[in-house]
Length: 302
Image (cartoon, one colour):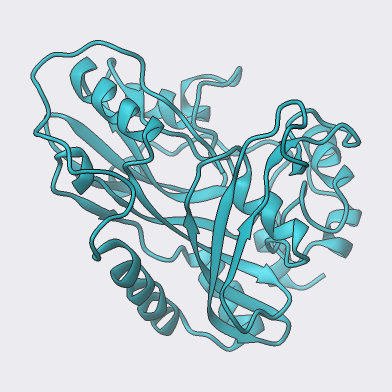
């Protein structure tokens, strides 16, 4: 195994957050919102390993914010923009906006296989009863128990050497939607332990950490999925929040696709500008946030 490969292999358990790193993850903050660029090894919600083992715990401990609410969640291995509300009114309003699909979202991913034209997938998703873990989803027939409509659009941005950098539009927001749809049409997300070449790698990693089978079957030690931008303007907040192309995925694209980080970022910025600066199809623009309103915020994850 090469030195570069050894550097990329994660430990059996994710490391604790270094308090010195946390301020550098902050994209934006005001009296209502805290926006973080989450790394692709960190769980969002509290875990049994203490406050510094999750983003929620680290924010409370390191930034002194006790009343926080995640507007949506990202899987541990998905990096990028994640939004926390600092008060009940903001959390309620944005939670309702998520439920009404008012947030604009732009993801980017590295797919296994070459994609040369835009692909729109309109396939319902539901639980996969054949999987060895309950969280796995798959394409199912409409009307199947647990089925939810799901639409994903994959836009190729760069293709070379058997890989594709794609911009991803989420028309709906279902659990694991991008990854499950990518698997279904034969272009799985690079490094995906659950929707990649062998779904048993997911449970194996959870129990044993990185193994020789992971090295043999996966070219990257986490799923190559990144939330590049979230558009809040339809909610009454005039923010388009972006997180840069992360270094680990940039290094992979440079090594395997001859795509340097600056060029990849330019392609991603162009995709975000095209998809999130146009008139918005997902809902009418909401009035400004009220000072008080009570309800629980909705969540989604990919």
